[in-house]
Every structure is written in structure tokens, then in C-alpha cells.
Length: 302
Length: 198
Image (cartoon, rainbow over all chains, first blue to last red):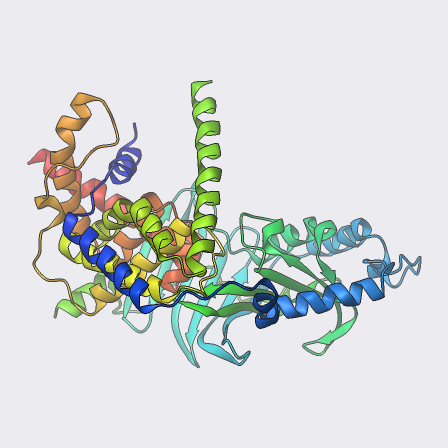
């Protein structure tokens, strides 16, 4: 057994038993809550009508019944210029062919918090990705300030991860097995397109970020072990057939059941004219070596 | 063949467990707090172990699990289960443990390596005999890791959480979470090797 496997096995085998004291404390709390609460009689119709989602779903069922017979996919026109009106399999091939021409891409990624009342807040932290066929770089900003650069570049049979933290004045390097991770936007686009036949909704022609686009919406449960509420939307430029915007919606916010967040990738620049040293890790003079976790922990102790 | 059969049995058991969880949550949301007792009894040991591994302190771990269930009681009627119940509770425990760690609330209770021998998940007598000592060494080594690295390692290996979910919780990229995992393993391996050499 490899040492890493043994450590994993040891951790998995950790088992403690809750004490009798904890049992008593929790059961007492439950008993107290039981006394204080007056259980409401469930009323299915009231439950449905109290829930906005269920109300909308009920309305949708009624609407669909009225317009029954409509086709889900748009008409399968033979107009060669309107490639998105072709069958979805052909549409997917058009996009994949366009993606095959991509040698490198940069894009912006932001997180948007969606509150229960529908209002939104965009996180001050955002990233710019630079991706080539074998290397990857991520610049992380806090507002206008560049906080960190991470490089993932080939190193022998593995990948060198080199990161520079400008806020900590530190850098860290580590070589590991495998490629540069799961964040390759082009791979993600290919993955989406491969599920085009399973799309929940076509988004029609609309202007996104100033470009005429077509797109589709798909539940994340279609491509992974994810909840159905997670939906992704992807829009393609009708001229270039390349993605313009990707939104991953409905992701849960830990500890806030009524809030979600959306990851948005936009400002795509395909085959950009990047500086020759974009994927060459650089460490500013005077920066100290150390993992950011270790440096922050040491500073906290001080 | 045996592995395949075990895998199938394990998947079937997992499906039954998820169905049972959905039933318990459904009852709980309709005011049946006895369903909450069922949830607590089902997951209490796993959650205490998870919290203890994160905080390397059993007393604080029990406080965390207590607090999580007190909050959970308050969500009766509005709790929506979007994934696995165990995953949700593990996430709550991890969040509470992280807050506790940040706030420096860890007091000097019973350290994980001072508890009696934990029940190893094996019937083999030799494994059972050495587990106490190995646990003590592992606990000591875990305690030396920065909290963020320990959290990734424990949530991934013990909690069975995916790096993507852990990354989301920590507010970092998936690559950073994977890097923390690898770095934690490297450090743990080197610390445990060092102990053996002593």
C-alpha cells in the first residue's frame, strides 16, 4: 500500500462515538423545541400556493396545457446561414468545429450572490484565465488590485504549480502528477456541447454582451451527480460560433438556504496575442517561499 | 468478483439510506421533531468524528455538533434537501468548526489523541490493537497542519466531499483545494515518517 493510501485509510478509519452527555444535550434541545412548537396541519394545496416555485410550476402546467402541441426545439430550417436552426447534433458539430480552432483563450470569471428577494451582489474578487493547449494561468483580483497569480505549466511528466501572492509577499511551487486541472474553459465548453441534445431550453436569438447570440440552458444534473436546481446557460456568437458567456446558476450558499450564487464567465478573447512569457512563472524579487496557508498561520501566531 | 458484489451492496445500501433520509426530512419539515432524533442518531458518530478530526479536540467537536443540531431544529418547515443529508450536515459541521477555529474558541478540552482507542472499522484483532497508537500519531500530525489544509484533507477523505464542493466552501479555486490536499498529504507523510524514525 502506498504511503498516501495508508494515510487516507487511517483517516477513513477514524471513528469516535458521541458521548452520553452530547446525546442528552441534543435530545433535551429537541424535546424543548417539541414543547414550544405547535405542529401545523399539512395542507397540500396551501403548501403549493405558498410556494412561489410551485405556483409558477402550476401556472406553467396550465399554460402548457393551453398551448399543447408546440414543439420544444425551434423549427429545423435548412437556411445554411442560420446554423443554429439545424438539428441539435449538427448545431453541436458546428460549435465543436469552431472550438477546434481555439489555440488559446482568456476570459473573466465572477461570482454573483443572489439574495432571496432576487437582488444581486457581485463579489469583489474576480479572475482572469489564460489557457493554452498545455498551460494555464489564473490572475486573481480583489477589486482593482492584483492579489495573486497562479501558473500551471508542464514539468516533465507532471505539472508545476507556481503561485505568487502579492498581498503576502510570498511564492510557492509544487510539482504534481497530471495536467493543469479542471478549469480549462475550452474543455468545459466541449463538455456542454456534448450534452446539447439533453438541453432543457433553447434561449433563442438575443444580444449578449453586445453580440448577437444563441444559447441553451441545461440542468447540471444532466452532466454530473448534481441537483436539478443547478442550471447552466451558455451563449454562442452567431458569427464566430464561439461561446460569449457561460452562467452556472443556482449554486448553494453554505449556511444560507434561501440564497444562491452564479458563476459567470465572460469577456472571452479567443486566440489572443499574448506576450511570449505569459505562461512563464515569475517571482518578484524579495518574495519569500512558503505556502500561503503556512505564512498566514505564522502571521496569526505573531 | 467479491469487490464488485461489495460495491453493488454498498450502492443499494446507499440508495436505501438516501430514501430514508428523504422520508426523515419530509417528516421533520412537517413538525415531527422525532424525525430529527432519527437523523441525529443516524449521523451523530460520523459528525463528531469529522468535527474532532477538524478541530483535534473532542470537547469542541461535541459543541460543534450540538450547535449544528440546534440550528437544524430551527429550520423545521423550511429545510430543503438538495443533495445528500449527510453531505449537508458535514458541510454545516465544517462551517461551524471553521468559525470556531477562526474565533479561537478552542479551549483545552480532551484532545483527540487522549481519547480511548477508537473502534477501528475492522474485525482484524491486529488492526484493532495498533489503531489506538496510530490514531494518536495521526491526530498529532493532523494538529500540525494549517487549518485550511487539514479541512480539505478531512472533508475529502473522511467526509467523502468532492474537491469542487470543498473549494466552493473555502472560497478558493478547485486547483487550490487540490493543491492543499496534496501538500497536506506530503506533510503528513513526512511527519509520520519522522515519528517512526524517532
